[in-house]
Image 1: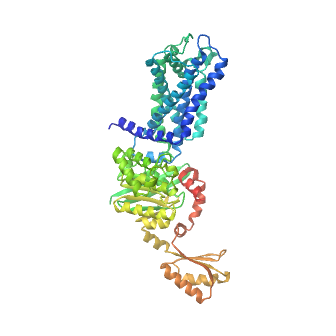
Image 2: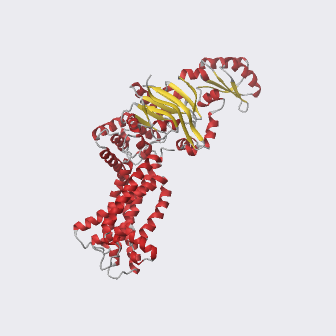
Image 3: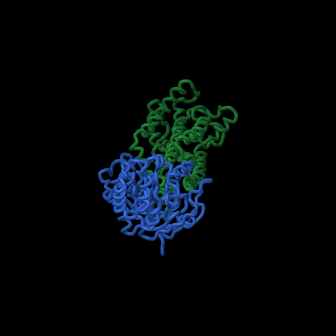
Length: 267
Length: 337
C-alpha cells in the first residue's frame, strides 16, 4: 500500500473510533442536533422580526448564512476533539504504533464531516419548517451542500491546528470564539455585507464566509432580487470559495501534521 | 552480545531540571531489565524516549538495533508499550480497543479481530469485552492496556510501572503474564518502585536516581549489597533500647537503625527466619519485652538508604517541584496521596 493509501486506511480506523464515541455519548449527538435548530429559530425569529431586506424574504436569505455559520462552529468540534485527545493516554498509544502520522488528524477531520452533515441535515429540515425553500434544481442544491461541507472540512484543519497547539479543551473554546465570531459576523451571513461601513465592508466582501454564503444562497435560489456587490469575490463566489478552501488546506494540513508530531515529542 | 534495548549517555532536560543525566542501559534478548527508582528518578522519561514518544537531548537510544531517532517507524513496528497512564480509549469496548490497535499495526481486519478475542480470553476480560472501557475497574484497565501492548506480539515490551495501583491478586496475575512472555522470547524493560517486583521479574536491576544509575546487578547481587530481609522489633520499654541494640548488632549485616520515638529497631539480616528466632531467644534471655516483631523484605527505601544514604522519600519531595515537567509521575503521585 502506498503511503497515502495507508494514511487514509489508518485515518478510517481513527474516524470509526471517533464515531463510536458520538454514539456512546448521546449528549454529543443531542448538542449536534439541538444547536442548529436553535440557531435557525433564534436568528430566524429574533433577527427575522426586525430586519427587512427589500427584494428578498429575509428568513430565506438568512438560512444560507446560518448554514455557513453553523458549519464553522461545527468545525470547532475538530479542535476540541483533538485538544481533548492530546490530554488523554490514548494519544501515547497512537504515537507508539506504526500508524501514519497524519491518521489521527485525517480521522478526526473525516469523522467531523459526518458530524457536520448531520448538522446540515437538521438545519435544512428546520429551515423547511420555517419557510426556507430550495428554488433551484437537485444538482445545484447538492452542489451547495457539498460546498458547505468542503468549507467546513477546510476550517476543521484550522481548528485542529489550534486545538493541537493549545492542547486544552477550555483554552481552545475561548480561543476559537475569538476567531469564529468576527469571521462569521463581519460577513453577509445575517446582513448585507456591502452595506457595512468602510473597512468592515471590504473585509465582509472578501471574507470567504461571505462568498460561501453567497454561493450557497445562489445554489438554493435564495438571493431574490438583491443586487450582487460589484467585487470579484461576490461575482464568482464558488471559484473564490474553492480558492480559499484549497489555500487553507495547503497551509493547515502540513502545519497540523507537524504540530501533532511535535506536540508531545518535546515534553 | 546483541542487545534488544540499549541506551548510551541518554540526557533529557526540562528547562533547568535534568530528568536523565547520562543513562546507560543494555538489555539482552529474552530477559527483563528492572528499572528501579523513586518518583521523578527518570524512569518514565527513559521509557518515553525508547518508545519514540519523546526526543532525547543527547545520547543514543536503540531498540532491536534501530536508532529510535532515525528509524521511529521501524521501532514502533517492533515494540509494545503499556504505560502508567492507561492508554486505552474509555468510550470503546475492550474488544474495540484491541481490534483498533490491531488495525493500526496493519494486521488486517480478520487477524485483528481474532487476536482481540484471543487476548481478551487470555486476560480474563471476555465477560467485559463488549462493555466500554470506562466501566472497567483499575485492574481491568491495566490488563486491557497490557493486552493492547501485546496485540502485535512485539519483540520488545516496555512496561512502565505495570502494577502500580493494582490489588495484590491482579499484581500476581500481571507478574505471571510477564514471566510467560519472557519465556517465549520477549525482551522487557520494566520500571517499578517495588523492590519485590524487580526481584521477582528482573534478570537485571538498574537502580536509578536523579536520572543516573546508582547501582546495577542481578537481584542477588543487589541484595548482597544491601543486605537481605529486615528484622524489625518494637520494644515495650525505652530502657531496653541499648541492650537490644547490642544483641541485634551481633546478628545484623551492617548498621542497626534505631527509632527512639517509637522504640523500634531495624536490622538487615541474611537468613531471615533463623535470625529472627535467634533475636527473640536472646531477647527472652535478656528479659527484653517486645510489643511487635516483624520480618520484611527490603523496600525501595532500604535500597536507597543503603546505596545513597538518603531515603527514597526525600526524592519524592524534591520531585514535587518537578512534577509539572513529568506529568505521569505527578499524576501517579496524586494517586498515592
